[in-house]
Length: 416
Image (tube, rainbow, N blue to C red; front, side):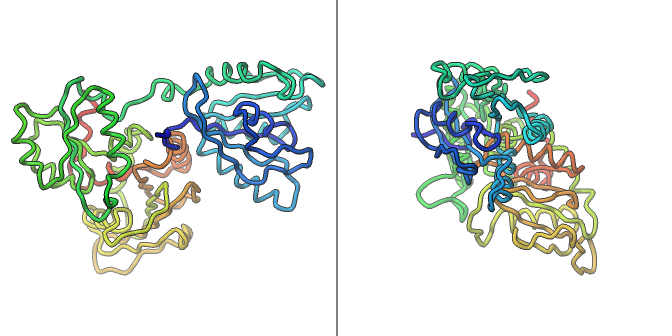
């Protein structure tokens, strides 16, 4: 089974046209996945290649268009290139004996702002070598002539790997002792795909098995019986967020309880930041705009969590009489006037899906999905962007438990 894209190290390859970006990637992957040419602008869109890069493990390379692309479509290509920045864990900047131009220097500032580690590869050193001063991670080589380029590249890359990637963070296995029984409550409702269970639940089961724990999977309607069947109480109960209230009423207080979304808030983002962000719910005022941000596109169902359930919870928590809900095609943060209502607060809720990140400065709160289809770097980048704009950010599971008044219990397991 292939490693999920969202769990792979995402490596972006950047640089000006004809510095050797695609040639480097072709050497590393030992495949011609990117077209190589002396004609400027050959790489038009982002080219992705997933592979096992030992000893690093599963990675995805993203080869981007030249930063100085002056062709007719160059501006759009560069725009796509810049959007990739928020998705990557590590950046590779390829230049040649002309050194770093203003294009690369501006990009490096962006990487440093987002805390993305980067490696500078000076190519074509067989023709001429120019020392690049002021930067720690520089690899001098000739992509076409250096026989040891693959070894040198891997060695330099390993030194840059983020700690959270090297240490392989667990989903739940580090929260309970080996040999523990963990009950997973998985509702089979409208959002459950026919014939299977959703990705975060599958990943959690595998994580518990890898940690030598014993997952016990039940529906919420069988939870009472499951607890009665066990000779000793479970070490932890994990529930789908949408059944949080019902499950919390069944599970005794002394048994730790949390949700899949909260586990993934810790795995994929910053749980403390999300907890702080949820507190902004009680400060929302009439006319405030709330952005509900999803990592992937999907067909909304009748009782959709991001378009129906969370807006309803916000109404109840804030005393909001009405909410105007729009989809991503209708977002206009400059026009967020309130909706008429006789009492309570009136919120404008925008739903936005995909990797792109809209301008968030006029929102009062961002609510992120569980991020099962994206990587940690992209979520952390979104948190940084939100922080820079002064906008609180939280996620589905945290919001649901906060609105239900059970957040302290839902996150207590992480303080033990």
